Length: 395
Image (cartoon, rainbow, N blue to C red; front, side, top):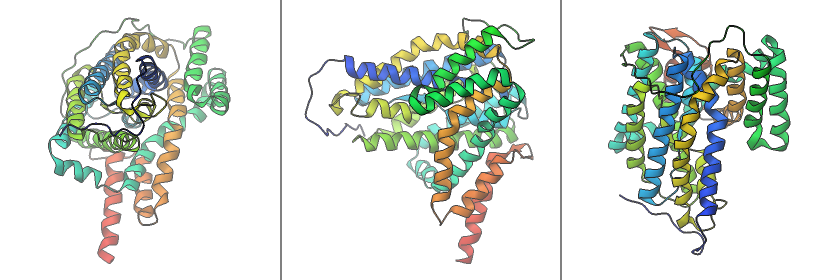
């Protein structure tokens, strides 16, 4: 059923400039603050520079089409983003059985499961019914491997990493929203002065690179299913919560079907997942975007359209990171993910009822193990659910 936003303030007859600017700023901040982890994740599962650049481009196109289209259709700020926790999962997973084509098969499965969740109310409820602390424990375990990289970078490449981390720290204290963007700017300067030895040149103009996905059972279970879970719980559910907090009743099923289908279309080109945004959604859906809730959909449309401008920058972004030491790329990703890790750990341990199963999920997910070709995050969720089930038997 189509839903309309609930007005919480009197109608406002201002122009489009304020909400449009809010949407544009949200897109620029979202893109600049997290593209490094997307490229790092794609490289980790075996993508070449050209394939990673293609993935970033197709994600931007998908975000633009879905974000602008859904916002205009439902007249609410439905901001769409790539799955940043999903990209962190790729970094943690590293090389998977079957290589990059098998990773694309996992991307395709994750998108298909989101579509299924949108088509089936029962599936949606089943996913949402996974205890939040367990889902947060899985996400925290994935993010831990990424968030330790700044410490490693300071030891391995101190000359590059120290200015980056110092810039991030200063801006984190005085202008937190710009901390990652400032760190990226310093990274660019350090790389220009002293590029990584032996780096190969990437193309400044991105091209869509089509790769046929393959299907490897271990990779589907170990990467595809966790990618679906972290995308649903940490992105889609969070985005819906942001909308609800701002007085909107979101079109849940159409949004899931659209973003899931967009993810499936983008998968053969390297796109891992698109979904409802959380942080940029808050920037577009809140009162700062426009005093009138019925006009904030303009921010959602502008947010989507600007990705068509940012998408072609994928090639330049890849050039920058191709000239950077790998550990430095992961350093930027780790700094970007620290707030998300902190929030996940807090949710993991807050509820006494689920604390032990959630910690088990976290520990196993962070272990980096691979069993039967299936990676740690899947086994982490299994461990948490088994502990939860065992305790319920005693009760």
